[in-house]
Length: 255
Picture 1 (tube, rainbow, N blue to C red):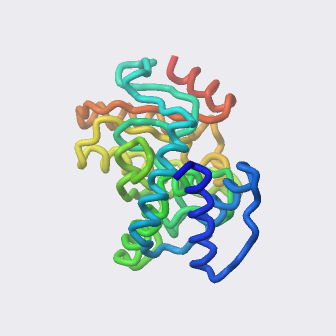
Picture 2 (cartoon, rainbow, N blue to C red):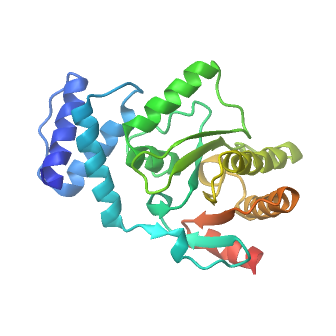
């Protein structure tokens, strides 16, 4: 099957699963938007082996087309610390960090531009199913500042570590800062416990959760350095940014 045939098959199967019918447009962009939307709104549940096989082949090729960046090809800005600007779903390393919500099921808003949406989209439907099993077993929503670890499925990294950051509605409090520090510590602890040699952090709680970018970056760098010093962990840490604004902030902090 060509990539287009795989995409059309996946769309048809997901529509059939919902007992819906629709004319599939011929344009590649429109098809990708429909497929991503259907991935995003699908509830956590199993799928057939055939569906998963074709989905996995499709997603891996899509990620390869975007271009994979291997941590081994990056230069550290400090000993064991890296700064990289790009799409975290294309990063090959031990683990990437997902800025999740308290449901821990991924973003259900079709084609939303948050990192939670991107990670669940390109990992595949297995990730939401796995997260759903974890949350069902836990029996309550994920508290802010903790972390969960899952396989990465179709992403080039090995694991995804999910953490819920603090949401800022007015001024930032000392408790907010401590909860953000806890996010970074919890993720590092999960990586350390699972012998993960490298981890990439997104800008947790900034963007949709409105934590000030400069303060969030300062907390991130300080917490990572403190953890490495306290534990002696030999772990490579990537600070992953997407916007030029965040790149400038981290460049100043790490210089």
